Length: 275
Image (tube, rainbow, N blue to C red; front, side, top):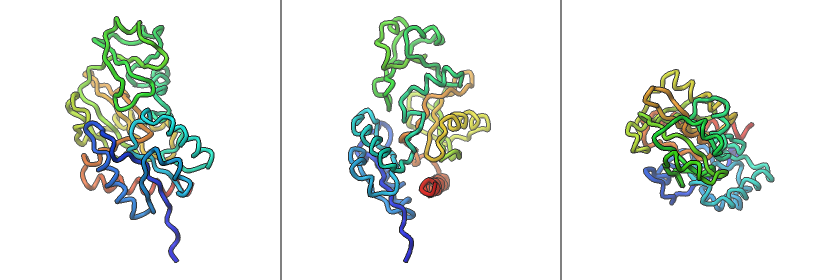
């Protein structure tokens, strides 16, 4: 008799209306490929806590911003920890999985990140800019983001928001990793069209930039996306370290790259289940 195949609960919100992206298409394609290696079922993020104990691992993918179901997500995390359930990505991620505190920590540590503060007393640490970005610490998908002039910053209600200078950048670029292995890069040539992406040939310097944040995050297994912007002076600055449910834009890469990525995720999941 053949050995039992690992059972995966794949968490996705197929109906989430992501701007410029098709969550459902990406997850339908990826799960169709993973079914060749695993027994797999899809569920909505609101159902994950109730279903997960029947599976060997939970794979959190395009499940939408957690702020839309914060209470259910906290209950899922608590139950996963209580049952010692394997969750991919593991729940100890230090990036977006834990909120935006990492932007403050990385700024304080001198990493190449868009300078970020969360107190009026620290506004003088930000470089001068034409306007400033104000966004919730618990935000995602640009929800709650606004641009304000410097004169309004002192009057903000601090504690739950972050402030950054609005960077005049040439383009945004994203680097995609499985575990600590680089897979591909994509960039948005037009700063006004974030999700109109094209393949990007990463240099050794680009990869060194991206790897420093993957190394900082200390996730042994999982999928991460390092988002950066290229300033007009040529410098890369971190925009976001997405380690919870990064959209992969697999429809924007060549078929051979997509196949290699799926192979890498499959191997990573098998290693994760054996660990």
